[in-house]
Amino acid sequence: LPTLAGNLLQVFDQDGWNFHDDVADKYGGVFKFQGFFGSRFIYVHDPTALQHIVLKDHHVYEHADDMLLANTLVFGQGLLSTLAPIFHDVAQDLCNAITRQIHQGKDQINMLDWLTRTALEFVARGVLGTSFDVHKQEIDHPYSVSLKNFADMVDVMHNTSVAIFESKKNSSASEEELSSQPGKGKDIMSVLLKANLAAPEQDRLPDSELLAQISTITFAAMDTTSNGLARMLYLLCEHPEVQEKLRQEIKDAQQGDGKIQYDDLMSLPYLEAVCKETLRVKAPYLDGD
Image (cartoon, rainbow, N blue to C red; front, side):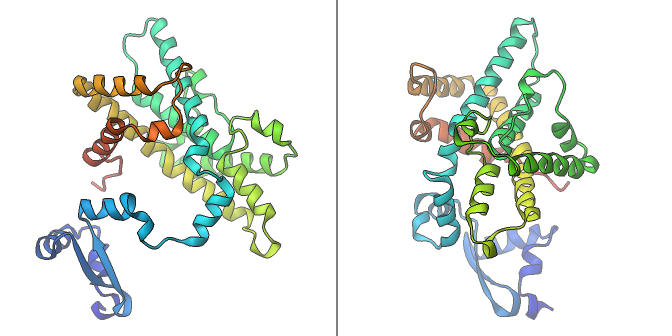
């Protein structure tokens, strides 16, 4: 068995932390290990090396060319920059909702709850092309509630995605009408549907696979986003000097209408440092314990 599987069983053993510690101490931040039938893999956990591979020099390393081409054709200038105006609108809705809470005399605001609502609305508009209006309701949306109850989650997620998918698939809305919808016609579901319909018959994905892709993106995006944002706010409260410096950087980058262009937002060095350090110290993942 060890010959067939190589080191894979040790690498992916849920209790294999001692193995990872031992090889890191013995071989350093980058080393080679064997997979099935002697296949070779590179194990990289050195932060500097990972930064070069994933961010700084990512163009040097291999990419899935067909996926990159499809992404460029579908989203044009890029997924994040395409969805940035939608995310800004959702963030403004959050600010308005919190302002209303303050005017109503609330002396305590549950930011995790509101950020969970915000993440849900990010997903609704950016992925599903709809709106759950979660910032206008005092009760949680069933989709959000289901994520806290794993037994109900799959059915609620699936049924919600199916209803929206069928509605969009059967829609004959014009481009002008799409631009007035919550996702502005740029949401991932609308884009995938249009790209799939434009593909040759033999290359089209079945509806079940499109739905599975949407459900996966939705599940992966929502809880990690809300937890990561909540943790960042908490850390900023613990470090007011960092909070003040970050606020000033953002205010300096804002235009007259309070908005920040995507390229300007991505070039804010202190904001990037705060985000990276938060994710490094308090990564939003599920602990097996």
